[in-house]
Length: 160
Image (cartoon, rainbow, N blue to C red):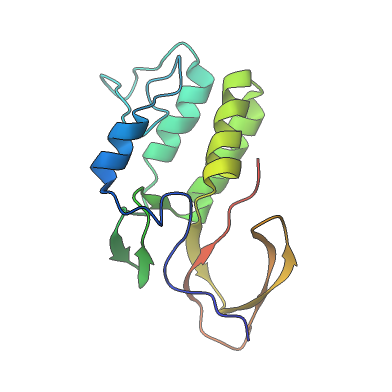
């Protein structure tokens, strides 16, 4: 039987540093944006950078109503990573927004976030009992126990 843990994984999950130390080391905002990065810096909700379509995508993602902050528990799940994990609906909207904007910056950001960083998302679904199709390092199609109770679980995001 395939075991899917209640804790997440990703590039930031195995770090021994604190979130502040890791973020300070990264200290990046995608150039020309104000909402795209761990240290975003808009003056107001309406404040967007030069790449405003990309910035709108990041702003929407930053305002996801269902998140699990780094190194904390919520919905019966443990986020072992340093960064906030979002509900899969928010991740999907972010992914599609970046794809639809068709800009070079959106493409670079999408690749960096979804393909390189590869954070997992969470949602309610039937219990996962296996992976029906593996990508490079991620499950692309899950196998569910449709007789079990729906519960919150971690899911791999798409590659960009």
